[in-house]
Structures are given as C-alpha cells and as structure tokens.
Amino acid sequence: MAYMSEEGYKKLVEELRILETVNRPEISRQIAEARDKGDLSENAEYDAAKEAQGMLEMKISQLKNIVGNAKIIDESKLKTDSVQILNKVELKNVKNGMKMVYTIVSESEANLKEGKLSVKTPIAKGLLGKKVGDIAEITVPQGKISLEVVNISL
Image (cartoon, rainbow, N blue to C red; front, side, top):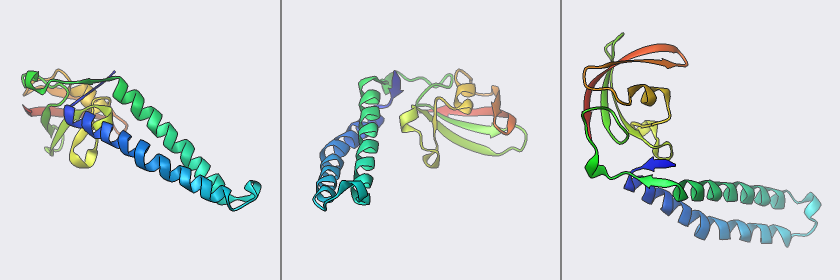
C-alpha cells in the first residue's frame, strides 16, 4: 500500500493516462513502420521499438499497481505535533548548523529537487514520530548524522 497526497495520486493517474493513450499507440506505430521495412532479423529500428514497447508496458504495469494500491491521505486530519507523512520538516544538522527543509512524501511523489523526501529513505524513517526539539540520530551511507527537528508544518 502506498500512502500519498491527492495531488500525487492525480499526477500518477494522469501519467498513466498519457502512457496508455499517447505513448502506447506511438510505439505501436513505430513497430508497424519498422516491420514494413522488411527483414526483421537485421532491423535495428524494429528491435529498438520492441524494446521500448517492453519498457513502456513495464512502466504502465508499475503505475497501475501503485494507483491500484494507493491510499489517499486526508490532509485535513494531519497534525504537526510530531513528524508524519506529508509534513514539512525544518531540520538543523547538529554538527555543522546547516538548515534544511523537507516534505515527507510517498515514494512515488519523492523529488529531492523540490525538497520532497520519500518516506522510505533513512532520513525520513529516522524523523517519523519526532517532535520539535528532538534530535534524530540517523545512519546514512556516509555515516551517522544528528538532525534536530526545528519546525513541523503542513
């Protein structure tokens, strides 16, 4: 089961719609075009189109699975007394004083450039349940880091 925001769910449904109604027919057209060029045993275009079709079908299958198992979180019931999914968390690295802000989101909504951190990452797992003022000791690939929860908001 994947917990996600309504916005994230709608994005996935739209991506799935585009893959099925735009990309799938386009790849079918490419396969037909390549097939029309003759001998398939030495046709690199055909092989590439078939490989692209396989990748597309795999992506469609994954998205259908995520959408089918999605549990939309009622954002009106979210609290900010402790860190939970869909909270925006302001953190301070205890060692160097560097501040950062992340929103804890589902795996499918994660985007580090937008400050959206997957709930499955070590940092997010270490923050869940923490309150303002708590220090989370988190093991990351580079070692252990200490992050102080400065603020929790929606």
